[in-house]
Image (cartoon, rainbow, N blue to C red):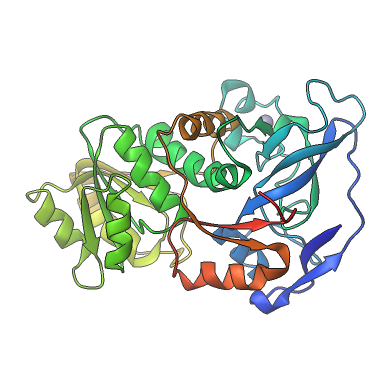
Length: 347
Ligand SMILES: [Zn+2]
């Protein structure tokens, strides 16, 4: 099979298209012909060796394959060759106290993560455990499924599950043009929130308004926390949806209403920040960590896409051999939504 490999950590020019042997599904596993996979900023951290996950070279990146089951390993039941599936990125144990209470993103004994502990989705084929499979329903294309999986399930997990967003609350979404930003605008609107969003570009803010954004803030011309206070009559927002880190994390804290909560899942612009404890406790704020999502949340988001309640945003699609162009586009931030690779050359 063809796969994108890096043999050393570094910039996008370390990515190579190579011919690798087809993986073999072991007991309880399936082989998936990958038709589509979305790019994630995590792939960049993995490739640069800064992800804090134990990744070794050579490595095939890519954390969210979508495709069709091509072969069944020994003892597999309930799945057929040809089934259209997305792969949940963690091979969870299914038995720890978190797995058995529907909190599998906290699994204490995960086998591996697709694209981190095992070969990833920038390839024509991957293997995974049946416990990782999520059916893609009719009405959701492979490309839409790839653009939905991590982006929308992450947004759902952060806003609804972790931050417990309620109708009538206000939400600040940082970077509305990103995959998880454009997803969060839609999830927040669907949940009945007043949605404020940031971007460095007016055209991205306009596009986000088509998805439910109520007020856009261009952070190149106005300090975010000051703009939020202007828009909310000096009250601040109930929830800040944060995935950037660094200065935006600080601005997020300063944008919160009393009893507000900042929920975060990323920090590629700065992982360690100063933290002023006094206003934090006097204003009774909360900072909430969020890590991935559950398979149930992926299934829910697929259903909401199928019924037209959520609209995955496809920025561009690329064949596998154009992986460098695709990655460079993602790192340029000059796009809106999700960038999709098509390893099988079809949708
Ligand atoms: Zn577990």
